[in-house]
Amino acid sequence: MFISKELRKKNIAEYLLYMWQVEDLLRANTLSLDKIKESVIASFDLSDENRNELAEWYGNLIEMMRIEGVAESGHLQINKNVLINLTDLHLRLLDSPKVPFYTAAYYKVLPFVVEFRNRSNGQDKPELENCFDALYMVWMMKMQRRELSEETLKATAEISKFISMLSLYYKEDEEGRLKLDDDEV
Image (tube, rainbow, N blue to C red; front, side):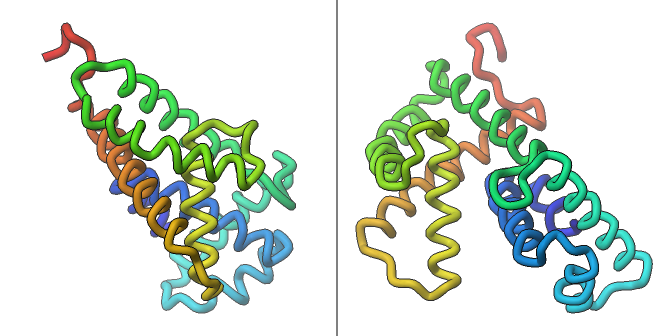
C-alpha cells in the first residue's frame, strides 16, 4: 500500500504495473489474507499500526477481487479505471496539434504493439492495454530468468519509452499543467 501510494503520485504506469503484480501476488496466495500476512507482510519491518494498515489494504483488495470475479484472472475495476483514464488522455494527446512528439512516438511504437497483439491473442484489447501487457510479460519473464529475444527487448524498450511519455503527460494533466486545446494558454 505504501509503495502504491508513492507510485500513484509519481508514475501512473509503474503504479498500474505494480497493481497488476499485487493482483498476481494475491492469486498466488489463493486470496488468503492469512497467507499474505505470513508470506508478505511479515517480511516487512513495520510498526503494528502500519502492519495492520497494510493487512487491511490487502484484505480490501482480496474482497474486491472476489466481488468483481477476478480471483483467477483479469483486473480489478480500480486498475481498469486507470487504464481508461490513460486511454482517454492518449486519445486527447493524439487529437492535439500541440504534442507532435507524442503522436510521432505513438506511430513509432504502433508496429510493435500490433505484432504483440497478434502474438498474444490480444485483438479484443485496447492498444494501451496491449502495451502494458507486453511490459508486464517481459518483466515477469525477466524475473523468471527466461531468455528474451533481441527483437522483444527492442520492442519493449520502445513501448516503455512511449508509456513513460504518456505517464509524464498524465502527471501534467493531473496537476492541471497540460494544455492541449488551442484556447488554453
